Length: 390
Image 1 (cartoon, helix red, strand yellow):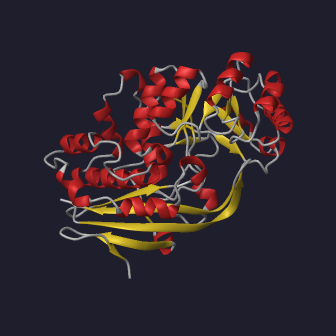
Image 2 (image 1 turned 60 degrees about the vertical axis):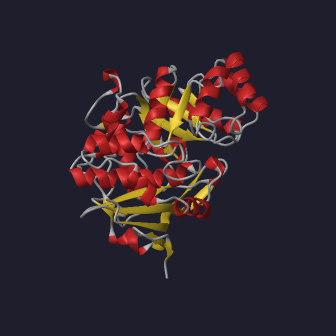
């Protein structure tokens, strides 16, 4: 049933840099996988980030080339949509590729192809997880405004029309220096309605001493995202017990093992779920359901500069389920003035809201502009091994 698999890397310059406390990004670096079935093609994407999962673009690409699409195809029951999806969902950890970003690229491409083959939207895949009725929704969802580290909080918010400020449900403020974080939080709180949640994202740059010192001044924050270096379980538990500070884990939570540790130690009140770092569409959805069952709040996040299949798959999850405390949509329209997908990325910046994408599959395909910035690494076809591109 799988006729061909192609592996690409994509490197696309960004129109503007994105900076946070520990990194600066000026170009997209993604892994793309194209899965061809009978008459349809599905596209997947992974965003390897060494500081999150330890993967690089090269290591994730090698992980894809080490997988065997023929063995994968044999494990899938192609008779119906539900059976095909159930087969993919039943694959063991590592059954698609070794490493979360590589697995995400393969899984999203395969699910996109399956959905296109049967004429179904990607959101229908989620039924295999049998989510509780209380999390189900189908329609537009509000998304976060993210204020970069290099942006002045007051200037960003003062430039918004009053109706937009009133529509904001969540504002994430990137921070570095702990004392400056207190000021940035105060400037946001002064300008936003009381019901608008404001969070701070330190990207693991603070020490336990500095965080404890300012914790009392962060009462206006809905949570602080990754305040300490990743997986500082003992210190995070101590921080929360001593101060009551709500803490969201991002780099510290990439899978079920991290989630279990966070819950048992009391290290977090929230988790940031991102498809690439969690291993794909279904893996991220499973992690969110488990976190919700444990009483932890969930943010559906994005990696900076996702080029297409990742943000589109995230959009499907965002608009199909309502368990999210907030959703990040990304800023592909700002970073890539020439659209990287057909249809182009779209978000309502007046109401900070996004609409579901029309299917089948993720609802998007690479544009000529994206393909211009890709390099084919290898191709797999039945009765053969992976062949390096000429």
